[in-house]
Length: 329
Image 1 (tube, rainbow, N blue to C red):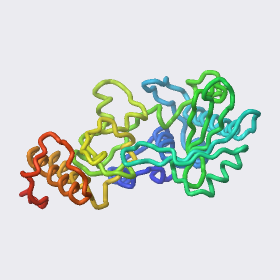
Image 2 (image 1 turned 120 degrees about the horizontal axis):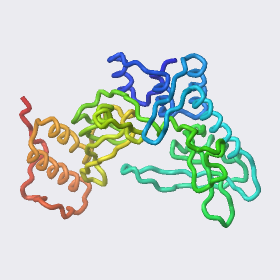
Image 3 (image 1 turned 180 degrees about the vertical axis):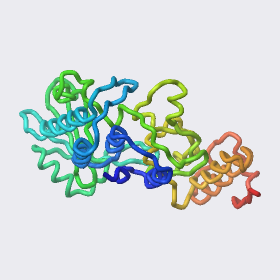
Image 4 (image 1 turned 30 degrees about the horizontal axis):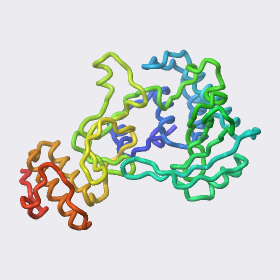
């Protein structure tokens, strides 16, 4: 199996190949789970792991005890997901299917742009497959009763193929495969594994849409030093990005295993990220960074003909050309 075909980041995959990183069958199972590939493609890969790779225990994690057989837990996960898809497809009295289309803004906030209802799963899926909806579409089975919000849904890719599930409060479906819910492992979110990256402090990367500057990443050494284990939510980092024309620090930017180096042109206020990177490398001072922030902001305001915001320390009369050169020798 070419496990690197399941990496969402070309740069992370190339780095791991370069350092000759080796992977256990368990780690490969987690990488497949985090690949963002359609659910049925992940099932095919997991079945290949079961048939072609040796069995091993699953490790103990922060919220998950160890199990003796990886193969068994993969089989259980596949059966659970196939069973749940079957239940979503199965028509029931008092249910409708809702196709929801979501539009994501640069600050990762979502607006619902289209909602359509259908009487059957096939009708809704057909609409998803032949519409131009992108990755932010969901097909939801909703129960029309008086007990509150009860629904179970599938997040779909741009071809209408199921990626993963999401649930409201519908206990009739949620993890119904096994009465002991903790037996069903979520390989995507239950575990943190060591996935080395090439990214250093000050690197400008992208999470798929927007550029950001890395300050630090959570790594395996962090958990080793605390004799602790992480989860899939610990693939995160800190750094800086532009949100609503303002430089903001983020403490938890998720899924760094899918980040790549930013290869586009930094435009608008994103030009400031170049100088944030230089600052984190120690090549310019914080004073230089603030000066550049004000210069870039002023040019942006003038170009877009908007009012100068009330920013503490912002002095228009102190600004000159943006093209300030730094001696980096």
